[in-house]
Image: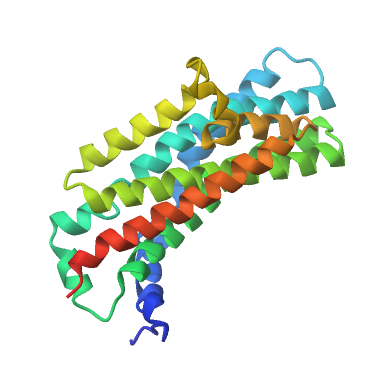
Length: 257
């Protein structure tokens, strides 16, 4: 069966790459095990901690559940995003399939964007979406208000932006390195360094406007608070995502024939 390709030269071959990666992630019910794993890792601990020893349910417990999920769940989801995408480019290089792929009518930008979009869908549905829905349903059972629920949706969107930052960073690193360990290690170092900005007397001035502050802003949004600085941090993070994708596409051009 012939796969349709885009007439736009920058997006030439996007759909076949996007479809190929989606099949790898969701084909033959491969999504079932990751779904159970991510709910168990990110959602269940928060629900267990809030309900442990509780004789009754309350809206305050629901708010606590949302905040606890955003604090405890974001870290494994961030690490998981690196682990999931660390081999997206490297494995193609190691198996020499990247040279075969790039010999086809495919642009470098389409390759990067196709992989980015497919992994973004997987993260949205399985890594973040399923646990977030589970926690959201539990919080509604606890009796949270409608305003709190909408604030929670905004918080989930902020966390998703953070995960997209990590995904774009990891894909970009994959175009520069030849080993998965190098990609993973560098991504972890950058992520941990960002989380440590507040410990430095000078760097902590930029921390509120960086990706490192998004988790805190997400927790505040779930509690009904939202700062203008959060919009700036989100804007800066989005620009970095675009920059990572652009750099990755530029770096991949050397594999084109």
